[in-house]
Image (cartoon, rainbow, N blue to C red; front, side, top):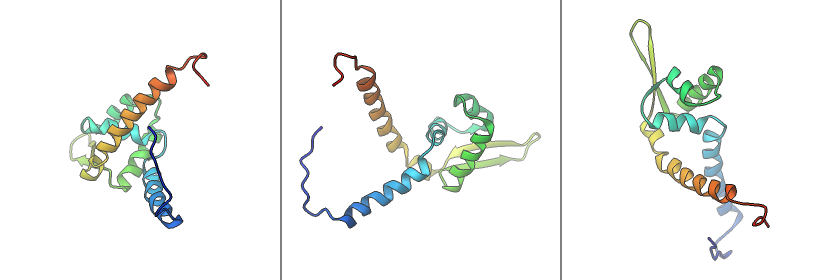
Length: 126
């Protein structure tokens, strides 16, 4: 996928104008566990233990930390139900679901990338 790009209209300030929002997004979504948590919640509301089972190798401490971070960024909502025992459920906010198309595109690209990289043999590696 080659694109003919010229330097017309490209300045350091326009470059920074593109870099800063991407850096902000990467800061919110970076790390090993945030995207798996978001993907897990995209399939419906979950209790802590359900997410812990769905996301291999995440520790309870890390899951708790990442849930707090995602909540602070308003991507997920924590709801506490008054019951005995107390029930806590996590869900995506409307703001969190605004990432659905981004996650889908990452899934598509990642699938193609896996095929491209995993399909390489010693003979066709340059």
